[in-house]
Length: 182
Image 1 (tube, rainbow, N blue to C red):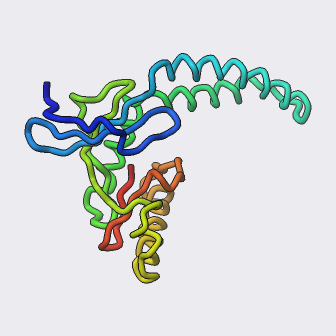
Image 2 (tube, helix red, strand yellow; image 1 turned 180 degrees about the horizontal axis):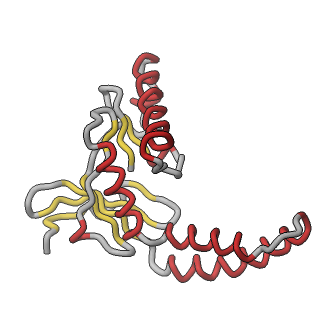
Image 3 (cartoon, helix red, strand yellow; image 1 turned 90 degrees about the vertical axis):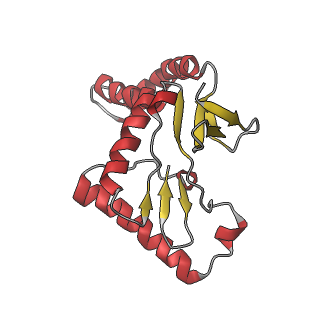
């Protein structure tokens, strides 16, 4: 196995999985995002319920074909549970921002990733819930704000490739004013 040790306690958790920190045999520290068991089955089942609800709401307020809208919603939700797709997006973001010292994107470790497991280099930072984040001086918080704004504007106007999950837990912050985008 390529993994030398893994922390049993989760480093972070999300709606469909949790993250564990591990050390590889070559010394690299990685974050391993593991999808909860049966999550794909659960979401596919929930989609059936969502379809019924959305169809009813559409019929109440709109006179249009509901099926193309639901097809799009379903495809996007199924993408969310496929970590291979997330790895593709992460690699693309890494390429787009590799030369920007204010925006740090972790590298994917493909040989330890799959549809339900995403392994990437561990890039520590200041989390939005950390006391250090809340106590940061205004000048540093302003620099973080500028870095976030530049990241989003570059995605929209330069790259035409947008990080579309604005949950602040998907970001960490660095003491030099830079950001880490997960």
